[in-house]
Image 1 (spheres, one colour):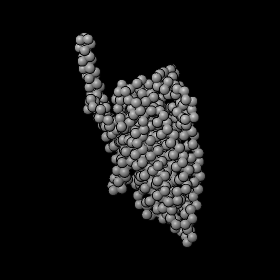
Image 2 (tube, helix red, strand yellow):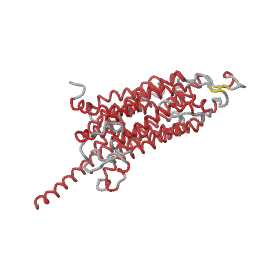
Image 3 (cartoon, one colour):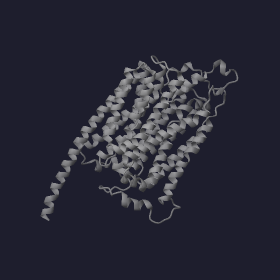
Image 4 (cartoon, helix red, strand yellow):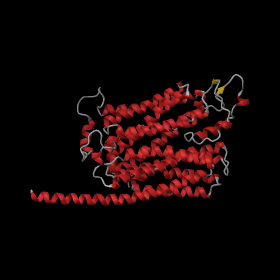
Length: 503
């Protein structure tokens, strides 16, 4: 038995350049999304701002990532437009990494992170759209690999930053010493771990005396410059693909490779779309294209987006608050030990996506989604039962990451397949996931702040049950949609037969 059948392998060989380019763009996405948490205290010193001010940078990044996910659907769904957008966005991420050390005010840093978030959102939508367009019914396995590269980038980023982080206070004043009034290294480690989840997990931060006036002694600039260099091959790869497809002015003016490929590998759209086809927001909002679809067509979009709103919200909430839960009663884990939970969670997500690359080839997307969502509920319930066990919290964190890792790519492939690649599922689902990661995390954070950290697991468990109920609703709507599509095709055939007989 071969690992992949000949058809899948031939598809990959036909599109390997584009596929590897989209995968590398998602590595750039992961590299940018994970660096802020570990480096935020050093950036606070660099900008000489308060902790309350610097945590707003997290919000700007998340908000503009959401905005970029929506704007990515405005890009024409053609290879030249998509590659140009990917080149600009991946290059912007490298430039942002290079410019961050020069931002000596929190407002400048916020603008830089907003630009980076916008670029990340565009990458998120375009890479998913193009892979679905390339592989369609075989896209599940390639989407799993695509989202594996997010995790890979998110693992590399903190590893690069760690050697350059300040172990003590990074702002030295003239009238005080680090021993007299600054926070201890353990306090700083505690703050870093709390801020690793997008900066919303911090509670009473006034107890930590973090100074803003004095001489800045941080070395974090080197980490950002190294990450800028690590990311530079990504826009270079996009540029090389554009040159290979003869999309650059300096390329050969003969017939473009993409034109020949489109004739052999992509069938023309039945609606005759050109440029702004599948996934474009303009195409989605075109009343002429919306007219004639059954209600189930729109419900599939909405329910699929709601599921990813919940599941990506669980990922963001768990990553943001598992440390706060671990260091609070009844567990009262040590700061260093609890700080490993977030890393273990993201590492298990990365390993899970790597494993699901093969599983998505062996099993259908509905089966994988059922297994994943049932697994998420089971783990959350067990975490509630064994809420006093530190060991089980580590085990549950790893298993939860493995189970929830495949939900996004599997749901995207499943929804697009249900809609026969004629809807706007990718744009809707990517935007919904980004919204859920930001909004649900804020909601869970507000509940924890008002009711206590013990509500953390309860909120995640309730969200898991809601997500599974929505999945059952999705399966029911899929059945209704398939029935409506069958009836409409039969009616069309009956109308065509009299016309044929009369002629």
